[in-house]
Image 1 (cartoon, one colour):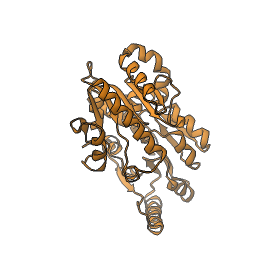
Image 2 (spheres, rainbow, N blue to C red):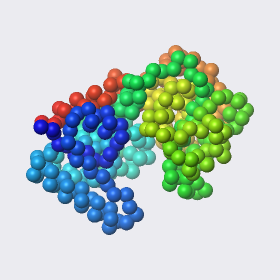
Image 3 (cartoon, one colour):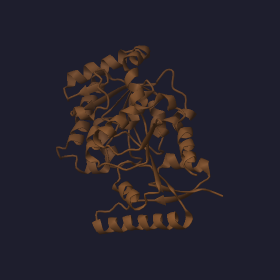
Image 4 (tube, helix red, strand yellow):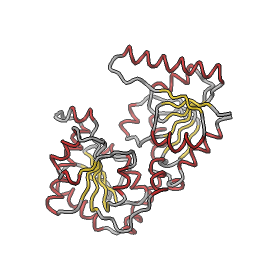
Amino acid sequence: MKHKIFVFEYHETVNEWIFKKMNLNIIFLQEINSNSKFIRRLGTLKILISIFYFHHFFGVKLLVSTIINSHLIEKIKFFFPKIKIISVQPYLMLKPEFKRIKTLTHDKILFYGSNQYENYIKYNNKLLEFEFIGSLNYAVHRKNNSRSINPSIKIGYISQWTPEMLKNKEKDKTQIKNLLDLEENLKKFLTKFNYSYNILMRSNTEGKEYKHLTQYFNKQFVSKRNFSLDNYKILDECEVIISWSSTLAYEYFADNFKTLFFSNNKDDFLINSELNNIYGNDYYNFEKKMNFMIKLDSKSYKNLTFKFQNTIVDLNNIYNTDKKIINIIKENLS
């Protein structure tokens, strides 16, 4: 007989590499994304009714959430205290996001590494259990793809433009300014030094993100993401990776890829590293740090960054996160 569990929000990698391997009956719970408060409340009511039905009539007692910072987690725990809630961290959160979220009442959170746990506890103090399990996306990718010995691309830039940010591009918002300053500096740098590069999009279409990026960079080197792990394959071929605050970049940083993070806000840096962080939009500082990173050999880089790498993604599980999550779920099914 198959075990039934609740799953809050669909996540492609978790579904393919965890749930399909476990032969479970999945009851998916999905929030309604709407500008209408009334419709959102109806969506919440539908979720609570569904949980009530399966919990009381079928004895379902486990919910696996693929998001951490939803207000619904608290509501579910309040109305159904006997349901155990385990959350799998889907991406790395910056300090400003930790500050914004309210105290959460998960039974267990599966963090990438100690950096995220320490920030969570700093701003939110209700947490019964936790484990460091690494990054599922990176583990799945690395199981099937070897690292390139001789990368063919000098620089990989990870775009973080969301549709909402593109819509408000002309407004002077902190996140937007970070991306615009980074791209302006990177454009100057590539024009001056003519290094090979690739721009990794979030989107899989030639829409607003593509149109924006091709204003700065040659469209020949701007790559759409057709599948969820496409960008990982490209980054395997990059010698130096740069982003504002991408989880993808931090995953590669934790596996000793030379990585740089750019921001005008010091709170956006998850690590306190003079080597890896470019603070502020001064071009000459940008150029200096880029060139130093390009010339730095891999062994020296690891010696300088290893103590930070393990805090971002638990290196003990960097290739085996899927097995770790499956075992944790199995332990909580009974």
